[in-house]
Image 1 (cartoon, rainbow, N blue to C red):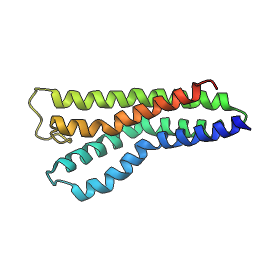
Image 2 (image 1 turned 120 degrees about the horizontal axis):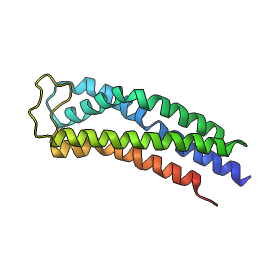
Image 3 (image 1 turned 90 degrees about the vertical axis):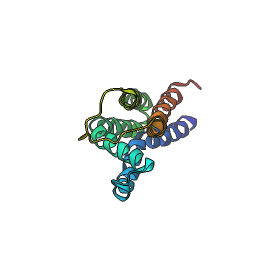
Image 4 (image 1 turned 180 degrees about the vertical axis):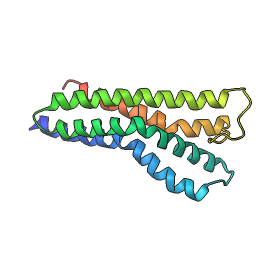
Length: 153
């Protein structure tokens, strides 16, 4: 049954990519609690991941659930329905990742005076690049999953 084997491998990829934002948030919360107000570059990066992760749950939670539902369907006879569910959620996640990358880069490049009561740390160009790495990785992973699911064999 080559179709079932392909569906199960695809489902594994979908699950890992769908759970990436949860993994980043799960790592950043304990790290952020340890590094809170440390004034270090790593503390600033982790604080930004926490901030974006918590507020991004509004989008990431439904997208992750939709991807996981699609992954559950990929292994049985409803491969097409699962492929569509995963594709819609992966494209939505990719657009949100792109939005997050744009917002972080725009905020860092903005020459305006910064609000002293801002929730987020002041990011340098180097820290911006490190902050956006998981989001670029997530977008690339989602696009890989979509390409993998729609590739004809």
